[in-house]
Amino acid sequence: MIKFFRKIRERLLTENKFSKYLLYAIGEIALVVIGILIALQINDWNENKKNETIIKNNTLLLIENLVADSVYIVNRRLAIKKDLEVVYSIKKRATRPNVKIDTLIKIARDEYTAAVYGVNFTNQTVFNTILGSGEINLYARELIQEINSIYSAQEMTNFQYGNSFERYVEALRDYRRRYTFNGPANIVSEGPLFEKLWGTIDEVDFIAKFNVMSGSKILVYSQTKRELSKVEDRINELLPKLRKILAND
Image 1 (cartoon, rainbow, N blue to C red):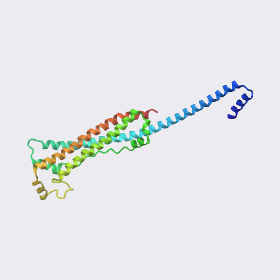
Image 2 (cartoon, rainbow, N blue to C red):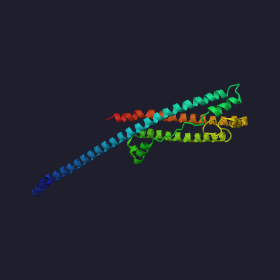
Image 3 (cartoon, one colour):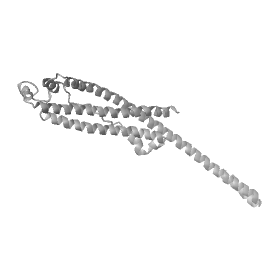
Image 4 (cartoon, rainbow, N blue to C red):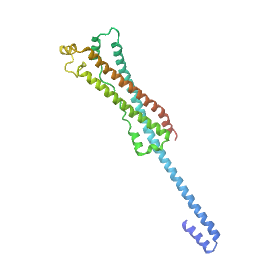
């Protein structure tokens, strides 16, 4: 093909047909330009198809992670709800007009559960990967903001839970320096020595420390529930938009 065009060019020059040669040269340049444009168009098409594949793969993984986070949130909220019901039941009994110190002592040593349900979002591998690779920039700006807001909310939930849990642990330690719970973790958990331990307590100090400890537990759960709701709401808003991306084949 190249030899064919070269022969035409040489013949026109030989025959001294400059005007026809000029038209031919312009046509040849036009063909080259068209060829370049077609090549660029094909390259852009291939790049777009490649990016579409990346977006769909990342979207599928994000959906899987966010659905798992939703299940995690539901389970945590149910567990927190049950434990809070126990704590509020204790509060109701402890604030009755005719309540006696023996009632609170029995609750503290035999019924109160010191453990709390933890919250820690760690399912962020996919997000961190697409963020680090820059592939998150393939999404629309509004969608990028929504994705970022979810994982920022998860980090805030982890942070808020950590702070409130530390305060609870401090209150728990302060309580356990003098008072105890009935259970296998304690050597003296029943019998005469156990009764003696509880028979010589400072009642005002005991009430104050138990109040701070149980109140700190309520605070942990109240703050955590609020932060979990924020994450859940944002996930529920984003998931339909991500599923729409997969549906657009």
